[in-house]
Amino acid sequence: MALQQLNKVLILFALTDTVLLLLSVFLAKEFSCQESLPETQLYIVLLVSWISLWILISIKFGLYEQPSALEQHRILAKNLQALFLFAVMTGALVFFLADRHFSSLFFMDVLSLFSFGILIWRISAIYFLKRWRRKGGKEFKVVLVGVDDNVYRLIDRVYSSPNHGFQIEGVFTNVVQLGKSEIKRKGKLSEAIPFLENKEIDEIIISLPYTKSSLINQLIRYADNHMIRVRVIPEFSGYLFQTFTIDYIENIPLMKLREKPLQSFINRVLKRTFDVIFSLVVVIFIFSWLFPVISLAIKLTSKGPVFFRQQRTGRNGSAFTCWKFRSMVVNGQSDSLQATKNDPRLTKVGAFLRRTSLDELPQFFNVLNNKMSIIGPRPHMLKHTEEYSKLVDKFMVRHFAKPGITGWAQITGYRGETKTVQDMENRANADIWYIENWSFLLDFKILFKTIFTVFFTKEENAF
Image (cartoon, rainbow, N blue to C red; front, side, top):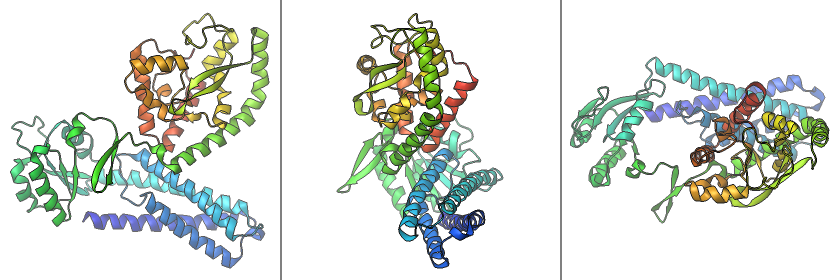
């Protein structure tokens, strides 16, 4: 039953995507100059190639899997990545197949309209799916074998929610008292398989210790023979709380800790492309005219250079020169003492630059130089890295990614001075979460929240 639903979803999404692409081409044709459009034969070749390419990319990125309300931002992020790859590959196709008279306006119109249509369609699909589920449209019937804290959490946050499309058919455990009246207990562990024989079940969730390996194998064997999906909550999930993936070498499972989204080449290209484009826009349209204004204000109000340069810790722990507008009087403590509230070293202009984050503008050159990213963990001075790497557990994990001008820690309350070790630990944990949960959509969220904070809110830690 579940397989049939998945096939219907695949066909529905593929057909809708095809219609959206055809509609985008038609509208772009109306918008573009008729004289610049490709010849009919080339036009048809490109159209068929684009449709085929998009469907292949969608299958590769898993865009035709049944949409889940569990991770909506990840779904949208995957669509953005797929659209980026589609733009690159279709651009290359046009370059090799079309002549120099091919309308670039037509091509850009197609990409823009299609990207807009796809994102609206995906968001709408998730919305209507959640609405349909809330009205009782259940999709997956599940049985839970074994009960622990992880299962309780799944029941509370996922399986009991009407948005996610699960129906709990039964829970099997040897625990005497469950403490959860809403759980549908059907019997002991030994009664699970007889219960499955009389029910149509889509999925079995197993959370049992290794001492129950015999029962686990029986459940998996039964599921395989009756086309039931199985998910196993590993026993070590009770004490291992970081993300991991499983690889196989010679059929031996190897667990990889901290599988990072930015290990993907496509994700890195996507993030770097955005960094370069956005930084160029800032440098050309903002920094170019604001630089002389800020430089003059700094020079007129204090002695010293316009720029402040400092060695900071970058990706993989390597040092780089971080650039800022100078906001303090020249002093000998700049490489050892961080800025504090009402810091006497701050100049009047410098205090304003820090409150408005304008002192960070030169770091867009660090981004263009590929030493930083727009979004990422904030880089610390070398002395602080050395100190906190010994005081804060897993502190160095944050250096797996390029440092950023702003980051997840900064928009979640961990900006500015770190008065205690706990403050730095909270910041490090936020940075690690960002690295492990990166998505293109998450970067946009951080960027827009940062811009909103700079212009419309007053932060106590901005000094």
